[in-house]
Image 1 (cartoon, rainbow, N blue to C red):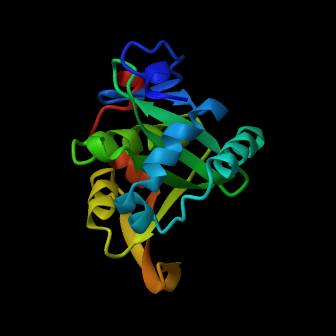
Image 2 (cartoon, rainbow, N blue to C red):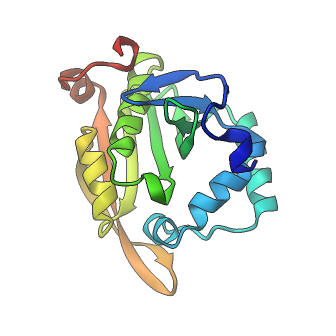
Length: 194
């Protein structure tokens, strides 16, 4: 998908919303956009991912769409501009657990969109799905992600030492989580109240 196909004024169906953002289901045609965000050197380093080929990403997104243990969305501004990819993946409904994933376009970082998107994602997880725990992982040195996660109510509960290899160097990953009762105690409007 190119910018012109999903820029301001885009009329994609929004399926969920948050403070100043909305979610639209991820589609195979979004692969180019997601590839560009994941290929950003800061995002690739902080997430510890190797971007891979566009072909491989299209195939992965196609598998995501058939995977009942995950929900993937584009994060949109009110005018329809796509600014990120967010997912609730590795969902174990019987256990009530899932993992959160978020990558934002470089030009939209640092504007509180990440916290708004995470708030909306956990509202979906706890308000519409039977989740009890949502977990997130990030490098211990990824201060931006740690700050966004903390703003959304996530609590750091541990460190997975030397659990990520990126560019020939080992990194520790912080393990953060938000439990249902912690979400219930948050004093903020829920997505359905906006």
